[in-house]
Image 1 (cartoon, one colour):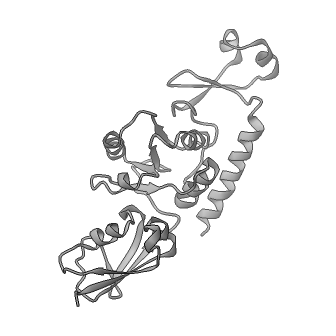
Image 2 (image 1 turned 90 degrees about the horizontal axis):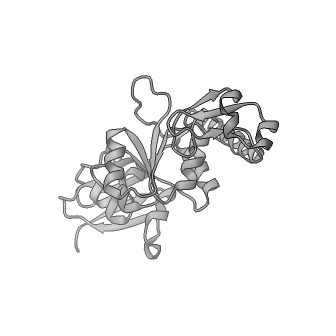
Image 3 (image 1 turned 30 degrees about the vertical axis):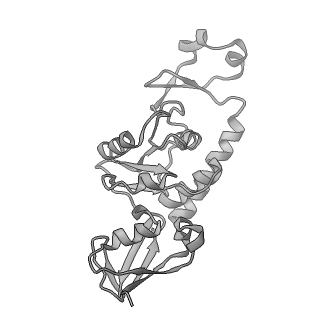
Length: 247
């Protein structure tokens, strides 16, 4: 019989396996030369989603070459997942692929440094992630398999609410709500109402006194008719991060 390896993956990773082979234990041919990283990805699991791994009960990294007959265990990424930060940086920076525009706006609402453009191709996303040390968030498994990518994560959920919950639970980032432009990611700065009165409609001038302006694109902000909905998002996000950080 051809030599085999037994690979057991965590339940959280089963979603990446083909539906016809979605079982926690897989037996794969063992040639003695394939790396652990190659074997795990051949099952369908992107390496950024694989947490601690063991071969024969001993810790192993993706470059390990398991011997025939070995038993491999692949855990999910632990949560909250730490991200290497630059000096003076208090929260991770992110870049999102073109399909996550609504998630990007919600992350900016929470004060997370979130780069997003709706016309970025995959190579450009990887370059930006690497050069600016941003975590690349995507639902494209092929993008996560790019060897050049320094740090990526798969976003679970089809609805923006679920996607945001997943990101906050995974990284438990420090939040700074109401400090970023949801349109361009620039920093918001307070602006005196008298400076911008000519740019406001009469109803807005009568109803609101506190304003902010994006230091990059000049967009004006105030707590308008949608303020209650946004407050709810901020409140829920704060609760989720506190719960995630306490794990």
